[in-house]
Amino acid sequence: MYPVFSGQFLLSDYYSVNMKIFITRSIPHEGITLLREKGFTVTVYNEDKPIPREEFISKAKNADGIISLLTDKIDKEVINKLNRCKIIANYAVGFNNIDFKYAFKKGIVVTNTPDVLTDSTADLAMALILACTRRIVEADKYIRGRKFVGWKPKLLLGIELKEKVIGILGAGRIGEAVAIRAKSFGTKILYFDSKRNARLEKSTSAKKVSLTKLLKESDIISLHLPFNEDTYHTLNKEKLSLLKKSAVLINTARGELVDEKHLIKMLQTKNLLAAGFDVYEGEPVINSELLKLENVVLLPHIGSATKEARGRMSLLAAKNIIAVLSGRKPLTPVY
Ligand code: DGY
Image (cartoon, rainbow, N blue to C red; front, side, top):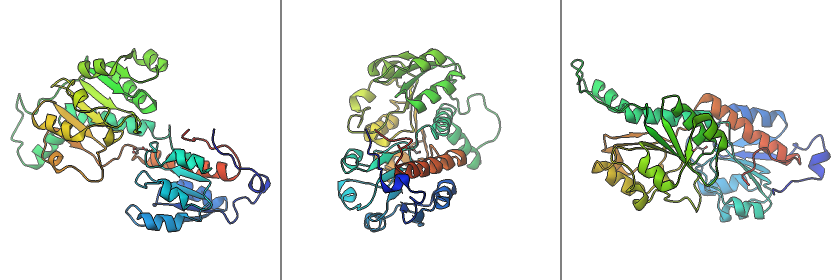
């Protein structure tokens, strides 16, 4: 399925000598250290901002391998300028930033970082669920605004998770990990996915249902679909209108899965109780209307942002590069 390179690199003990790796941003050291130990020449774009496109091209064009971020748009034009590249190791589980089909055609392997960030991302989805249902951010602002004058019977009432229905949209690794966490709070799990997840059904008694049923019956909906041409605006105006007024929507996947403008209208008009966002349509630009809402929790795309996950992502990206450039199969190719 993926290109495997053989020949001089495979048989040589010195395959990494003169091989250049370009990393588009400073990432945790684990993978960089490993690559350097193996003899690769590693260059890192060290600015604390996404690398400008022209600079990316000039730094990457003669690299044998690239570690890219989800903020790097690697389209046909960029791929055509890569003279020596054999592998693009995306430092993320999502890879919608890369035209991976075109890369494949050009003989470039594309890898991502699945599994190693599942628990961290699921923890964050759970944190958003609890933050929205128990109004944690509003409560924090209340204290900081010096409004707390004593216990009140009706102060900041939220909703309890026990017996609530959680709808998991996309029952892959992260969706499953969220369902397992949510189950321990006494919730009932529905899920929608093109494939059945028998393990999830066994561990949480989850039921596979249609998207319509999931949206109509869930109290909390958590998005875990990959973003690609088929999943753009999975929750469009029509689908969003199926949600209960009392529902909470959580998105730790990709902003483009939801018609954000319509979602904002629903939140403004109280046609939805609350929403937790870690990702945005068109991020890093944030719709200013979102900032005015009390019933949202807004995070800066930190799903995998734990020391553990980011260290493992760095190592996995490096291992993919080493495997491919030494003529072996990639560990986690995207296709
Ligand atoms: C990913 O890896 O795709 C996540 O969005 C990072 O948080």
